[in-house]
Image 1 (cartoon, rainbow, N blue to C red):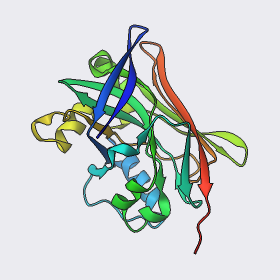
Image 2 (image 1 turned 45 degrees about the horizontal axis):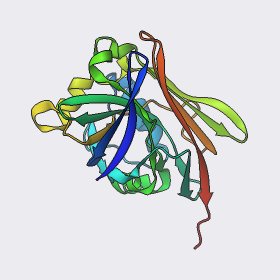
Image 3 (image 1 turned 30 degrees about the vertical axis):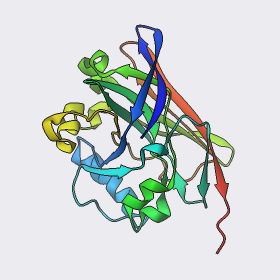
Image 4 (image 1 turned 30 degrees about the horizontal axis):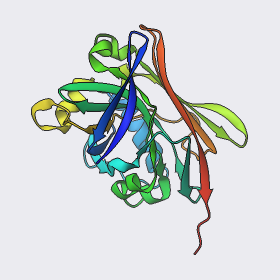
Amino acid sequence: MFDLTFNVDDKGVATPLTLEIKQAVIAGWTGRDPVARDKHIAELEALGIARPATTPIYYRCSARRLTFADTIEVCGEDSSGEVEFVLIGWQGRTFVGCGSDHTDRKVESYSVTVSKQMCDKPVASELWELEDVIDHWDQLILRSWATIGGQRVLYQEGTLDHMLPVKDLIARGFDKGALPEGCAMFGGTFAAKGGIRPASRFEFELEDPVLKRKISHGYDVVTLPVRG
């Protein structure tokens, strides 16, 4: 466990809040539409990644993988980011943020669980109260951009009505239907436009079109050489 200090947005006023992150969960295959969900599963199968045992499925990774860093280091050329909303439980409250489940795809082809441990998980430093957005949750928008070969391209985009309802997602993964205190859960993602591929930079955002605000972050990817 370790501490991260976020800024909680309350009607345009940012209030610092230090949260003790005790565990990290990566929820996978959380699509509400089985057709769209199966498209993402097929996308990963094309990379040699086996179908999940259940949908949704809840992987664990080290809490210390969460980072505000604007640069991460990865081994080899086989990793990529993906935008996800992030839920954090704290003292009976649930906060909403945004992050990237950066994953080593080569490792993912033989062990999804191990792949979740291989890369840092960049997150934005801003949070919203879930209760402030729950009534228009389905209208929230996730987007990401990847810089590939020097070109910045739209990599992912979609509204959360394509994901399982947030309360359903929590209830399926945790006893008593509540997010444990200090638990940060990544909530799933959308298929990549043009397919999954590595990038030298990855940027992501969560947009609230009703309250006219965004949570965003970006990071560079430094590739370390792999020696045989």
